Image 1 (tube, rainbow, N blue to C red):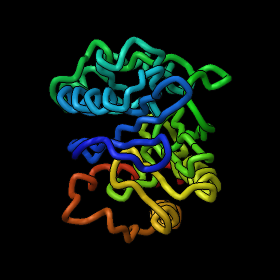
Image 2 (image 1 turned 60 degrees about the vertical axis):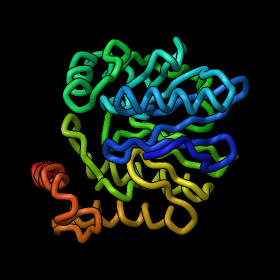
Image 3 (image 1 turned 30 degrees about the vertical axis):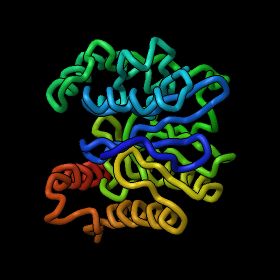
Length: 255
């Protein structure tokens, strides 16, 4: 809800009004990489305005995972390579029409012909900087991006202050997948001062550990068969009740 703002050297964030979604811009040699730009057409256009003011060309895009709200693009960003991990790119291609339909239903003015046109990230990482931390929590081929030299972790749809862990209905074993992912993200978080979630506020300093602790506590409670005590749940966020019950049911089926 506002303009692009800098969170670390060469890393900028712009937040959408739609579920507090964060579009991320990362400076690389010779240009900029856009990560998960969104959400509706007018916001994508304003993001393009902000990017223009940086005075560097967009050289690539990256989708952290194959959900429709992370597979968007705008003509003003240019015809550049748009990447995802190989499993995520494969699923996005298979489900492109569904992603377009969900985008049309959920937001306005999205360039639907550009939804989900991602290709597998090459082994050398292409123009996408940092280290990818790939896992299967939340979505097939989900990847966080660790920019250790800048002290930043781009977490995708993990470590949010507004979203609980959201299990992938396509995949079994999400409880274990989340535990494994949080272990890896926890190790990465030891190298950063800033975490940018896909949705919610940017975490800095002690808040980074607090985000990890909140996600771990939620998952641990489900592992024990208990109802989580989580500030992200409650009357202020009744729209999360359905996904939470789905998580509980998925864990129950796995027992």
